[in-house]
Length: 448
Ligand code: KIV
Ligand code: ZN
Image (cartoon, rainbow, N blue to C red; front, side):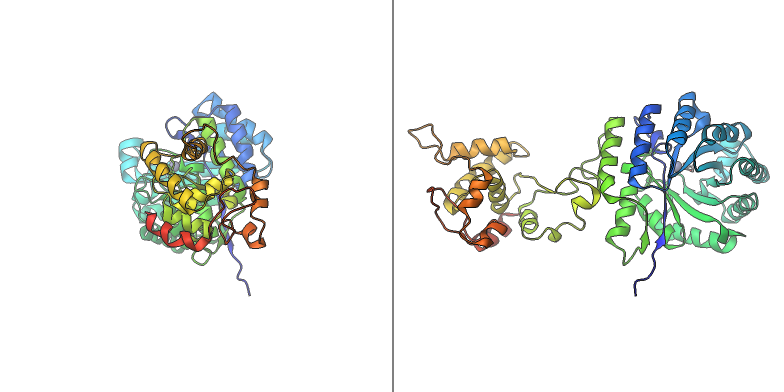
């Protein structure tokens, strides 16, 4: 019998915390465009901005509130009247508005930044949450720098927020200082110690200063958090926030360890990542998990060989499942003959072993000089390799794929497996593939 998976609320803060990362600010129109994509992506909450911060952000939150109907739209506010009223003004037309109030609770923030005593902090939190609740049913409270706050004081502030009507308690690891077991323990302690917590959603908001944002988020979920705050491509203050795509795919790929479900539409992940990058002009780090351009690229020969035989050898999720058009075999100096032969075939050329050896030798020399060998390089190389000394006419003409398939149609098998047993010569007198076994050992050895 299938066990029911807990549903995790995805709170996307790309438009607020994400926007706070250098070079990532977005104008009103851009925020609206991205909010529409976040809606298609299936997130549950869109934090659209910090309305008191600027006229532009106010207008953006207002526009998102007016247009987006399914997800909750949240606006951030400090724990003071002008912020909360401004946030409400921007949010009040939303189908599902949420006011998100935050107030620092760690001694370092209280003393050196806010110049408040703990008693004043407690009072401000209570007052602010009462005001927010008088305007909006759905109110979230965040004790900023929670992970460096004295836990006993943290429970007191959280108690006060719950009594004042908080529906979500968000626990921020504001400076990315926590480690997974510790963060999980904190969430578990909050569940034991805060009165009325059973009627409130606990949320995790992790920054990536130590590269632990996603790991901390997953630990929080395992300990009972049911909302995660995250951003597309992990953008956000300093080293960024926990990445939405990494959290969601960890749950999808490892349900044995993370038996949780989300409303995210996997196929919309890559389009969201690309749109964000296009809007901000900030490229995605090539090796970024899930959305980087190398996340589904395979260059090493041994990997390419495995991928051709069975993609599961080196891919734990399909590119399609996250909306990436196709996995790419990047031809570079680490590529093996098998990958080269396959690419040549896709370009319409088929070679016997000797011809392939010849091309392969030249290909490796070229790849040593230029990093990635593109199709146009390969075509040039093929023509060049097979040009007879006395004539400029290539010996091997480019075969349209259909003709190439027809050439191989001696057996059904030959059509479904590109390198399975096939005749050594064809009716056109052109080279054809050799049996798969010929390549196997060799690709393994050539690969890195
Ligand atoms: O990192 C943080 O503490 C925040 C709060 C405003 C939730 O972004
Ligand atoms: Zn943050």
